[in-house]
Length: 451
Image (cartoon, rainbow, N blue to C red; front, side, top):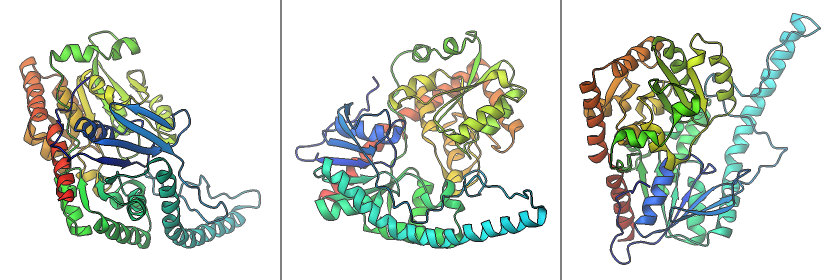
């Protein structure tokens, strides 16, 4: 197993930390790396995750504990409008305007009535949601407090659990670290909320973040935005790679027999997408781009929901359908081996939100740690690191032809050029973006709060 390179601090420095997650802790590699590294540094770590079918309520792994609790459920009779779909901006009701048997006029009247009803539910329902969530956060904190008696640090891994951390601090004591790993109000479906509700959410985040004892975030562009919008100074803790495993790259890659699993010849070139299969991540564009990359296959490894199911169905109708493969998500500790098995790591994230434009995804750093060249979006967040490290090729993520050309540039490069890309990636993984350096920054935040 790859080590983190983090050593314990001096006597009395380590204490108890609880990482508060809004997910079941299956594929959350940032939280996994933080928990494992803190445990290695002598901290008593508890990861508090959401309860999910098929997962234990209590487990111990890599030196830390995991507990899963149910989130409180709102009263069924209260209005609860769904968030907009990330891909379309439409509410996820599944309803479609219909003419019906009474003719187009009657159909338009019914459609107009549905829109008025939906707007009313949205206006009233979101106001109720805003008030109700504070109550539910308190209930959530009660459930966590029943299984985690106390902590010196309550670390909120994202905006949703931040008010839960505040409630726990008021009841149990301790300090709060807000890990603003995304620009939450500018991400995914939140960015498509109506303006008044986005402004309300932004105000609440500002108040909550300024009530925290410290804020960390995932890159320098995010830190600048948080400074301007929340008025807080955030310490940057990159999603850096674990220390590269010693030995030959081919031996690490062979530990994950992707080609054998898919029945592919050993000479087949693998374009790897590893991550959440969701709108805005560029997976649709990759599926179209692979048609322009001869003698290569696209392997998509990651979780998803209805969007992933739809994408699989759509990919089956594409010209290169036989060269597109979907595989389920893998555990965080398996990611280095899976990444090393690819010939190129592709991450054409789309410029759909400010959060996406400034993101530096975990998979970029995973590729650096595995010595795998990247094809990444030419967006402000990722592009700066790819140019600085010389570890890959940039593309226009909205254009499948541009993505295909960038992939070919990597795959068809002479051996000496591919060796340069690999060495550049590994040098960055051992240098400023190394995970042990990131954890050292987090530990310094903890030490500063204890002074």
